[in-house]
Image (tube, rainbow, N blue to C red; front, side):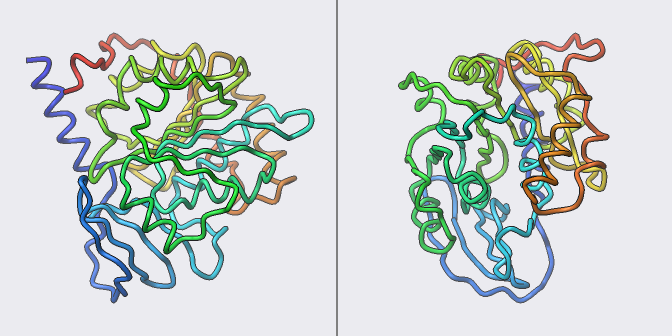
Length: 291
């Protein structure tokens, strides 16, 4: 029954992972191509360019200003990036992004931190081709077609930052949502490295999700947008992290100093919670139970 229960939870999670917009606004279809993972489409609507898999929005860019956030979750990821301890010289930062979409967040990182070495792993070759054709991809970004988990398993590279932003047509792929995978990610971090993970809030799944992350990472926090209920949840995970007060101060200061786009992060930072606070008796999600 445990396996069946998790399957039912995944079904519920799938219905919430990326809400479909059922409006009738006119859209201009630029491309539609079927991949092994669903119908990938690119279209313009209301001055914004979108990339979808099936009916689920994966990525979007404001055509008038690519630094203006379309989705709250990418804005929150940009806020969370500022939590990492800045490097002395600011060069040679190794960053891995798992999941490309239209490449808007990876492109933001490459534009904001031109000295970083940014690799993006994307499984779907159609997504890669359409993203390159219809979205501005910084020339310094290296895109690798591969399974994110196998890529980490087959290489020994160590990263300062890993951004886990992989969604399929409906949910995070199960192989990228288990105790074993999170421990693998942690093993690929440098001593002061950090993982940022984009997930979707779900009352039925949150406790098991946090239980899994507690078993995987010694330190961790999450933030969400107070206007979104439910909404995306961004996790900050590491072997070592300072207190939430130190992180909030650093993020606020660097947000202003670097002139990051979006509203002041103050309201977002007020939602910050530790994954290790309170009791949690849930069993972690493992390779054996996730399916």
